[in-house]
Length: 439
Ligand SMILES: Cc1ncc(COP(=O)(O)O)c(C=O)c1O
Image 1 (cartoon, rainbow, N blue to C red):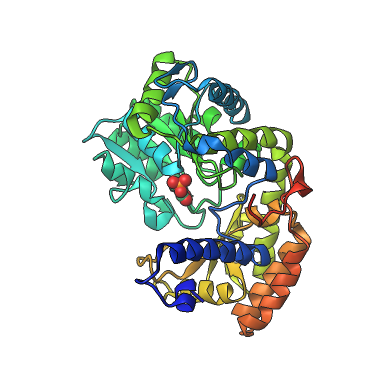
Image 2: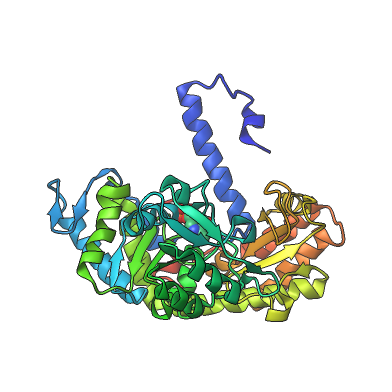
């Protein structure tokens, strides 16, 4: 139940009541995930030391510019943090350039688009209907930069751009930017072929790794900066398990190009860049250096097992011919195109404490009435669930969505399963702080 239904005071809260309502709602949300199964593919939880790093005085400070070249005093210690972070980002993502200031994946994209193109230029991208992100479309960042977008023909069977037709499109349009990467991201993009076509016509290749950044850093998905991407953007809080924020990375060794990328971030699209989150990102990168390869490997293994288990429970899981997934995501179809069956399934799961999101699948045209679900296992993996638990979670889905059991009766079993997984793994000092509690 929504908290407002409980307090019933939508318009008449006193200042004190508003404070209490916010704190109560935050605690309830924490409780929901602590006792439930967080399976939204774009989310994750942070480690105890990342929590410590973001809960400092840095949350209120400014540091415009780059380490050693600031517009304000008082930045010496933060310079140390950002310097460590830039070096770690180059190492962890195997990049020649890293800017770690971006406050989100979308802001990283706006910055990259600003550095790489002028208003009126053209860009190619995956359509939102095929899983591209809104920031790749005219309604989002691409529109903010006033770029003309053409979308790749899509291979539904393989769930990736139709390579021959997409290369032909790139050669015909000669876009300023060839943008690849999606929000629905089951398999690595055949990047080399697209990058060859792009570079042939002088286009810059931008890879949006928001979702799969942790898998890339862990060496289990693809290696965009060695497969032809000139620039890679991403979020710091999806499969890469840091606080909310973004990265801007490049394979280029050209210092003038690095300056363009840095300038696009500041003064381009950030002034304050949330220094506490930068500190958290740096801790997350250090922990990733130590534990990330194992984490990324386990995510993909769990996702494959989850896809197989759902299929054997009787679900229609997409991309069967390719083993369902090579990432953290699994897609399921719950009814006809545009039927809204995905929305109904997501609501029933939520009643059982399983948090997912409805998603458009190939053929769907209505974002609010899609036929599918997009499911991510990165958070469950992070609290230590393995392949046995993936099979168990699939059977909970089946009880709710196939055998029509009352979700409320399944909720107790969800809670029981989750009770054994209350600490973030793949990090230092795991048991020093429970995963789902504040600081
Ligand atoms: C492919 C892609 N790019 C960019 C973003 C935006 O990331 P953020 O939410 O960090 O702004 C997302 C978000 O899910 C995404 O899926």
